Amino acid sequence: MKTPKSTILDYLDWRGDLSFEIDSINEVDCLVFATLSYMNMEKAEFVQTANLASAPTLHQVYSSVKNTKCFGSMFLPLFEKCALSSRFRNTKVMFYKSIVDIEKQTQFSAVTFVLESGEMIVTFRGTDDSLVGWQEDFNMAVGTIPGHKYARRYICDIAEAIPKKPMYVVGHSKGGNLAVWSAAHLYDIYFDRIVKVYDFDGPGFYGDFIESEEYKRIVSKTTKYVVDSSIIGMLLSSATPQEVVESTKHISMLQHMTTTWAVVGTKLCRMRSRSNRGLNSQAIVEELIESLSFDERKQFTRLVSDVVESSNIKTFSELKSIEAIPKIFDMIKNSAVTEEDKKLVQTIVRRFASIVKNNTLSKTGLDALASGKQLLHRK
Image (tube, rainbow, N blue to C red; front, top):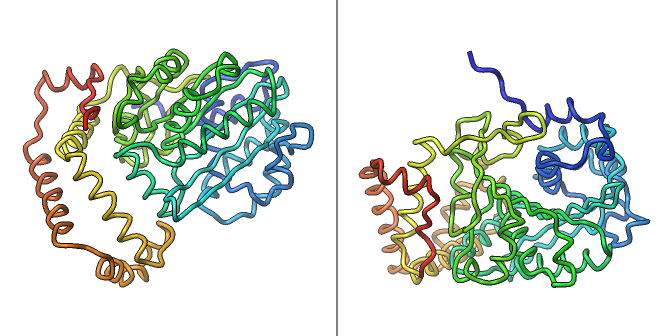
Protein backbone atom coordinates (compact mmCIF):
# COMPACT_ATOMS: atom_id res chain seq x y z
CA MET A 1 0.00 0.00 0.00
CA LYS A 2 1.42 3.35 -1.08
CA THR A 3 1.91 6.09 1.49
CA PRO A 4 -0.35 9.10 0.70
CA LYS A 5 1.68 12.00 -0.64
CA SER A 6 1.68 15.38 1.08
CA THR A 7 0.93 18.63 -0.80
CA ILE A 8 1.60 22.31 -0.13
CA LEU A 9 -1.57 22.38 2.00
CA ASP A 10 -0.10 19.67 4.23
CA TYR A 11 3.22 21.52 4.23
CA LEU A 12 1.52 24.58 5.73
CA ASP A 13 -0.02 22.44 8.48
CA TRP A 14 3.42 21.03 9.26
CA ARG A 15 5.66 24.04 8.72
CA GLY A 16 3.33 26.98 9.21
CA ASP A 17 4.38 27.66 12.80
CA LEU A 18 8.05 28.22 11.90
CA SER A 19 8.96 31.75 10.86
CA PHE A 20 11.32 32.39 7.96
CA GLU A 21 13.80 33.71 10.52
CA ILE A 22 13.92 30.28 12.17
CA ASP A 23 13.79 28.25 8.96
CA SER A 24 14.84 30.04 5.76
CA ILE A 25 12.85 30.13 2.52
CA ASN A 26 12.87 26.98 0.40
CA GLU A 27 11.50 25.74 -2.94
CA VAL A 28 8.16 24.69 -1.45
CA ASP A 29 7.63 28.18 -0.03
CA CYS A 30 8.33 29.59 -3.49
CA LEU A 31 5.73 27.24 -4.99
CA VAL A 32 3.25 28.51 -2.39
CA PHE A 33 3.96 32.13 -3.38
CA ALA A 34 3.64 31.26 -7.08
CA THR A 35 0.22 29.76 -6.36
CA LEU A 36 -0.96 32.75 -4.31
CA SER A 37 -0.28 35.01 -7.30
CA TYR A 38 -3.40 33.58 -8.99
CA MET A 39 -5.60 35.39 -6.47
CA ASN A 40 -7.30 38.58 -7.61
CA MET A 41 -5.96 41.08 -5.08
CA GLU A 42 -7.32 44.29 -6.60
CA LYS A 43 -9.72 44.92 -3.71
CA ALA A 44 -6.96 44.86 -1.10
CA GLU A 45 -6.05 48.37 0.08
CA PHE A 46 -2.56 49.62 -0.85
CA VAL A 47 -1.63 46.29 -2.49
CA GLN A 48 -0.59 48.14 -5.67
CA THR A 49 1.89 50.37 -3.86
CA ALA A 50 5.61 50.32 -4.63
CA ASN A 51 6.29 51.69 -1.13
CA LEU A 52 7.24 48.87 1.22
CA ALA A 53 6.34 50.86 4.35
CA SER A 54 2.69 51.23 3.30
CA ALA A 55 2.28 47.73 1.83
CA PRO A 56 -0.28 45.46 3.58
CA THR A 57 0.59 42.13 5.12
CA LEU A 58 -0.55 38.85 3.63
CA HIS A 59 -3.03 38.49 6.49
CA GLN A 60 -4.53 41.91 5.70
CA VAL A 61 -4.80 41.07 1.99
CA TYR A 62 -6.56 37.79 2.78
CA SER A 63 -9.13 39.66 4.89
CA SER A 64 -9.90 41.83 1.85
CA VAL A 65 -10.17 39.06 -0.75
CA LYS A 66 -11.58 36.08 1.15
CA ASN A 67 -15.09 36.71 -0.20
CA THR A 68 -13.91 37.30 -3.76
CA LYS A 69 -15.52 35.16 -6.44
CA CYS A 70 -13.05 34.77 -9.27
CA PHE A 71 -10.77 32.28 -11.04
CA GLY A 72 -8.19 32.34 -8.24
CA SER A 73 -10.73 31.71 -5.49
CA MET A 74 -10.02 27.97 -5.85
CA PHE A 75 -6.83 28.72 -3.92
CA LEU A 76 -8.58 30.42 -0.98
CA PRO A 77 -8.00 27.42 1.34
CA LEU A 78 -4.27 27.80 0.67
CA PHE A 79 -4.44 31.57 1.15
CA GLU A 80 -6.28 31.12 4.46
CA LYS A 81 -3.68 28.68 5.78
CA CYS A 82 -0.92 31.14 4.83
CA ALA A 83 -2.74 34.13 6.36
CA LEU A 84 -3.23 32.33 9.67
CA SER A 85 0.27 30.86 9.86
CA SER A 86 3.19 32.38 11.74
CA ARG A 87 5.37 31.71 8.70
CA PHE A 88 3.46 33.73 6.10
CA ARG A 89 1.04 36.10 7.82
CA ASN A 90 3.40 39.07 8.23
CA THR A 91 4.83 38.88 4.71
CA LYS A 92 4.30 42.20 2.91
CA VAL A 93 2.35 42.12 -0.37
CA MET A 94 3.03 44.92 -2.84
CA PHE A 95 3.30 46.17 -6.41
CA TYR A 96 0.32 44.09 -7.56
CA LYS A 97 -0.26 44.50 -11.29
CA SER A 98 -3.03 43.06 -13.43
CA ILE A 99 -3.33 43.93 -17.11
CA VAL A 100 -5.79 42.49 -19.62
CA ASP A 101 -5.44 44.03 -23.07
CA ILE A 102 -7.70 42.43 -25.67
CA GLU A 103 -6.26 44.51 -28.51
CA LYS A 104 -2.70 43.39 -27.73
CA GLN A 105 -3.90 39.87 -26.86
CA THR A 106 -2.20 39.86 -23.50
CA GLN A 107 -3.04 38.93 -19.91
CA PHE A 108 -0.33 39.84 -17.43
CA SER A 109 -0.24 39.84 -13.65
CA ALA A 110 2.53 40.01 -11.08
CA VAL A 111 2.90 40.64 -7.37
CA THR A 112 5.88 40.90 -5.03
CA PHE A 113 6.05 39.34 -1.56
CA VAL A 114 8.61 40.72 0.91
CA LEU A 115 9.66 38.73 3.97
CA GLU A 116 10.42 40.40 7.29
CA SER A 117 14.11 39.83 6.50
CA GLY A 118 13.70 41.97 3.38
CA GLU A 119 14.05 39.06 0.94
CA MET A 120 11.83 39.60 -2.11
CA ILE A 121 9.81 37.00 -3.99
CA VAL A 122 8.90 38.49 -7.36
CA THR A 123 6.01 36.40 -8.64
CA PHE A 124 4.46 36.15 -12.09
CA ARG A 125 0.97 34.71 -12.57
CA GLY A 126 0.23 32.02 -15.13
CA THR A 127 -2.75 32.00 -17.48
CA ASP A 128 -6.05 32.82 -15.80
CA ASP A 129 -9.63 32.12 -16.90
CA SER A 130 -9.67 34.77 -19.64
CA LEU A 131 -9.75 33.67 -23.27
CA VAL A 132 -7.35 36.48 -24.13
CA GLY A 133 -4.81 34.83 -21.83
CA TRP A 134 -5.07 31.62 -23.82
CA GLN A 135 -4.77 33.58 -27.07
CA GLU A 136 -1.51 34.91 -25.71
CA ASP A 137 -0.33 31.37 -24.95
CA PHE A 138 -0.85 30.41 -28.60
CA ASN A 139 1.15 33.46 -29.62
CA MET A 140 4.15 32.17 -27.64
CA ALA A 141 4.54 29.46 -30.28
CA VAL A 142 5.58 32.06 -32.88
CA GLY A 143 7.71 34.50 -30.88
CA THR A 144 7.83 36.95 -27.99
CA ILE A 145 4.61 38.29 -26.48
CA PRO A 146 3.70 41.65 -24.90
CA GLY A 147 3.77 39.93 -21.52
CA HIS A 148 7.54 39.56 -21.84
CA LYS A 149 7.94 43.34 -22.07
CA TYR A 150 5.57 43.89 -19.15
CA ALA A 151 7.55 41.34 -17.09
CA ARG A 152 10.87 43.00 -17.82
CA ARG A 153 9.54 46.43 -16.89
CA TYR A 154 7.96 45.00 -13.73
CA ILE A 155 11.11 43.32 -12.37
CA CYS A 156 13.28 46.36 -13.12
CA ASP A 157 10.81 48.69 -11.41
CA ILE A 158 10.48 46.59 -8.26
CA ALA A 159 14.26 46.11 -8.06
CA GLU A 160 14.64 49.89 -8.13
CA ALA A 161 11.83 50.42 -5.58
CA ILE A 162 13.43 48.08 -3.02
CA PRO A 163 17.22 48.47 -3.28
CA LYS A 164 19.92 45.98 -2.29
CA LYS A 165 17.63 43.16 -1.06
CA PRO A 166 17.99 39.56 -2.34
CA MET A 167 15.45 38.51 -4.98
CA TYR A 168 13.75 35.23 -5.81
CA VAL A 169 11.92 35.24 -9.13
CA VAL A 170 9.16 32.66 -9.48
CA GLY A 171 6.19 31.71 -11.61
CA HIS A 172 3.96 28.81 -12.55
CA SER A 173 2.99 27.83 -16.11
CA LYS A 174 3.18 30.95 -18.32
CA GLY A 175 4.39 32.73 -15.17
CA GLY A 176 7.44 30.46 -15.12
CA ASN A 177 8.26 31.51 -18.66
CA LEU A 178 7.89 35.19 -17.68
CA ALA A 179 10.05 34.66 -14.58
CA VAL A 180 12.94 33.32 -16.66
CA TRP A 181 12.54 35.97 -19.37
CA SER A 182 12.35 38.89 -16.94
CA ALA A 183 15.28 37.70 -14.82
CA ALA A 184 17.41 37.20 -17.93
CA HIS A 185 16.70 40.78 -19.01
CA LEU A 186 17.10 42.43 -15.60
CA TYR A 187 19.42 45.44 -15.68
CA ASP A 188 23.03 44.54 -14.90
CA ILE A 189 23.11 46.73 -11.79
CA TYR A 190 20.42 44.52 -10.19
CA PHE A 191 21.29 41.11 -11.65
CA ASP A 192 23.58 39.89 -8.86
CA ARG A 193 20.72 40.32 -6.38
CA ILE A 194 18.91 37.36 -7.94
CA VAL A 195 19.37 34.37 -5.64
CA LYS A 196 17.24 31.90 -7.58
CA VAL A 197 14.70 31.65 -10.39
CA TYR A 198 12.01 28.98 -9.98
CA ASP A 199 10.19 27.97 -13.16
CA PHE A 200 7.27 25.76 -12.13
CA ASP A 201 6.15 23.79 -15.20
CA GLY A 202 6.41 26.75 -17.55
CA PRO A 203 6.74 26.40 -21.34
CA GLY A 204 10.04 27.12 -23.04
CA PHE A 205 10.83 29.69 -25.71
CA TYR A 206 10.55 29.98 -29.46
CA GLY A 207 13.26 31.48 -31.60
CA ASP A 208 16.80 32.54 -30.73
CA PHE A 209 16.32 33.55 -27.10
CA ILE A 210 17.89 30.37 -25.63
CA GLU A 211 21.04 31.07 -27.65
CA SER A 212 21.31 34.61 -26.28
CA GLU A 213 23.81 35.79 -23.69
CA GLU A 214 20.90 36.97 -21.51
CA TYR A 215 19.48 33.46 -21.31
CA LYS A 216 22.86 31.80 -20.78
CA ARG A 217 23.63 33.99 -17.77
CA ILE A 218 20.36 33.10 -16.01
CA VAL A 219 20.47 29.32 -16.55
CA SER A 220 22.85 28.72 -13.63
CA LYS A 221 20.43 30.51 -11.29
CA THR A 222 17.33 28.72 -12.60
CA THR A 223 15.60 25.52 -11.52
CA LYS A 224 12.89 24.29 -13.87
CA TYR A 225 10.31 21.80 -12.60
CA VAL A 226 8.09 19.66 -14.80
CA VAL A 227 5.36 17.29 -13.69
CA ASP A 228 5.37 13.70 -14.92
CA SER A 229 2.42 13.72 -17.33
CA SER A 230 1.90 17.45 -17.80
CA ILE A 231 2.89 18.62 -21.27
CA ILE A 232 2.89 22.39 -20.69
CA GLY A 233 6.34 22.54 -19.13
CA MET A 234 7.76 20.55 -22.03
CA LEU A 235 6.51 22.82 -24.81
CA LEU A 236 8.99 24.80 -26.91
CA SER A 237 12.72 24.98 -26.24
CA SER A 238 14.63 25.18 -22.98
CA ALA A 239 18.28 24.61 -22.12
CA THR A 240 17.60 24.57 -18.38
CA PRO A 241 18.00 21.19 -16.63
CA GLN A 242 14.63 19.85 -15.52
CA GLU A 243 13.54 18.37 -12.21
CA VAL A 244 10.64 15.93 -12.61
CA VAL A 245 8.09 16.32 -9.81
CA GLU A 246 5.58 13.70 -8.72
CA SER A 247 1.88 14.56 -8.50
CA THR A 248 -0.91 13.13 -6.35
CA LYS A 249 -3.13 12.98 -9.48
CA HIS A 250 -2.98 10.90 -12.66
CA ILE A 251 -4.84 13.20 -15.07
CA SER A 252 -2.41 15.39 -17.03
CA MET A 253 -4.07 18.79 -16.53
CA LEU A 254 -4.68 18.09 -12.83
CA GLN A 255 -0.98 17.33 -12.48
CA HIS A 256 -0.24 20.82 -13.78
CA MET A 257 -2.09 22.29 -10.78
CA THR A 258 0.43 23.16 -8.06
CA THR A 259 -1.88 21.99 -5.27
CA THR A 260 -1.43 18.40 -6.52
CA TRP A 261 2.38 18.43 -6.44
CA ALA A 262 3.90 16.01 -3.96
CA VAL A 263 5.97 17.44 -1.10
CA VAL A 264 8.42 15.65 1.18
CA GLY A 265 9.64 17.82 4.05
CA THR A 266 10.91 21.09 2.58
CA LYS A 267 11.41 19.60 -0.90
CA LEU A 268 9.23 18.77 -3.86
CA CYS A 269 9.11 15.03 -4.43
CA ARG A 270 11.43 14.18 -7.34
CA MET A 271 11.17 11.33 -9.80
CA ARG A 272 14.29 9.93 -11.46
CA SER A 273 12.70 10.51 -14.86
CA ARG A 274 9.30 10.91 -16.45
CA SER A 275 7.24 7.74 -16.69
CA ASN A 276 6.74 6.03 -20.07
CA ARG A 277 3.26 7.52 -20.11
CA GLY A 278 4.64 11.01 -19.55
CA LEU A 279 7.34 10.55 -22.19
CA ASN A 280 4.78 9.23 -24.66
CA SER A 281 2.49 12.26 -24.16
CA GLN A 282 5.46 14.56 -24.57
CA ALA A 283 6.56 12.83 -27.78
CA ILE A 284 3.10 13.12 -29.34
CA VAL A 285 2.83 16.84 -28.68
CA GLU A 286 6.40 17.54 -29.76
CA GLU A 287 5.95 15.60 -32.99
CA LEU A 288 2.72 17.43 -33.79
CA ILE A 289 4.23 20.88 -33.20
CA GLU A 290 7.40 19.94 -35.05
CA SER A 291 5.28 18.93 -38.05
CA LEU A 292 3.94 22.50 -38.33
CA SER A 293 5.93 25.02 -40.32
CA PHE A 294 6.42 28.53 -38.97
CA ASP A 295 3.79 29.82 -41.42
CA GLU A 296 1.31 27.14 -40.33
CA ARG A 297 1.83 28.07 -36.68
CA LYS A 298 1.20 31.73 -37.47
CA GLN A 299 -1.89 30.87 -39.51
CA PHE A 300 -3.34 28.67 -36.76
CA THR A 301 -2.60 31.30 -34.10
CA ARG A 302 -4.32 33.94 -36.20
CA LEU A 303 -7.29 31.63 -36.77
CA VAL A 304 -7.74 31.01 -33.02
CA SER A 305 -7.62 34.78 -32.40
CA ASP A 306 -10.16 35.50 -35.14
CA VAL A 307 -12.61 32.92 -33.82
CA VAL A 308 -12.32 34.14 -30.22
CA GLU A 309 -12.65 37.81 -31.15
CA SER A 310 -15.82 37.18 -33.16
CA SER A 311 -17.67 36.08 -30.01
CA ASN A 312 -18.84 37.78 -26.84
CA ILE A 313 -17.35 35.01 -24.74
CA LYS A 314 -14.58 36.33 -22.49
CA THR A 315 -13.69 33.44 -20.17
CA PHE A 316 -13.26 29.69 -20.23
CA SER A 317 -15.94 29.41 -17.55
CA GLU A 318 -18.44 30.83 -20.04
CA LEU A 319 -17.12 28.57 -22.79
CA LYS A 320 -17.71 25.46 -20.67
CA SER A 321 -21.34 26.27 -19.86
CA ILE A 322 -24.22 24.66 -21.76
CA GLU A 323 -25.52 28.09 -22.72
CA ALA A 324 -22.27 28.73 -24.56
CA ILE A 325 -22.76 25.95 -27.13
CA PRO A 326 -24.86 28.06 -29.55
CA LYS A 327 -22.37 30.91 -29.08
CA ILE A 328 -19.50 28.62 -30.01
CA PHE A 329 -21.18 27.63 -33.26
CA ASP A 330 -21.97 31.29 -34.00
CA MET A 331 -18.40 32.18 -33.10
CA ILE A 332 -17.03 29.79 -35.73
CA LYS A 333 -19.70 30.67 -38.27
CA ASN A 334 -19.23 34.45 -37.96
CA SER A 335 -15.44 34.45 -37.91
CA ALA A 336 -13.45 34.92 -41.08
CA VAL A 337 -12.68 31.22 -41.55
CA THR A 338 -11.39 30.78 -45.08
CA GLU A 339 -11.15 27.56 -47.07
CA GLU A 340 -7.41 27.66 -46.45
CA ASP A 341 -8.06 27.86 -42.69
CA LYS A 342 -10.40 24.86 -42.85
CA LYS A 343 -7.79 22.86 -44.74
CA LEU A 344 -5.19 23.67 -42.08
CA VAL A 345 -7.47 22.51 -39.27
CA GLN A 346 -8.23 19.30 -41.18
CA THR A 347 -4.52 18.77 -41.75
CA ILE A 348 -3.71 19.23 -38.06
CA VAL A 349 -6.47 16.83 -37.01
CA ARG A 350 -5.23 14.19 -39.48
CA ARG A 351 -1.62 14.59 -38.37
CA PHE A 352 -2.60 14.33 -34.71
CA ALA A 353 -4.63 11.16 -35.31
CA SER A 354 -1.78 9.62 -37.27
CA ILE A 355 0.83 10.52 -34.65
CA VAL A 356 -1.28 9.08 -31.81
CA LYS A 357 -1.91 5.91 -33.81
CA ASN A 358 1.69 5.36 -34.85
CA ASN A 359 3.50 6.62 -31.77
CA THR A 360 5.27 3.72 -30.15
CA LEU A 361 8.42 4.97 -28.50
CA SER A 362 11.47 2.82 -28.97
CA LYS A 363 14.11 2.53 -26.30
CA THR A 364 16.19 4.97 -28.36
CA GLY A 365 13.28 7.41 -28.40
CA LEU A 366 12.79 7.10 -24.65
CA ASP A 367 16.49 7.65 -24.02
CA ALA A 368 16.53 10.70 -26.28
CA LEU A 369 13.56 12.29 -24.53
CA ALA A 370 14.81 11.42 -21.06
CA SER A 371 18.11 13.15 -21.83
CA GLY A 372 16.20 16.35 -22.63
CA LYS A 373 16.55 16.39 -26.41
CA GLN A 374 14.81 19.49 -27.76
CA LEU A 375 12.89 19.20 -31.00
CA LEU A 376 11.28 22.58 -31.38
CA HIS A 377 14.10 25.11 -31.67
CA ARG A 378 13.92 25.73 -35.37
CA LYS A 379 11.59 27.68 -37.60
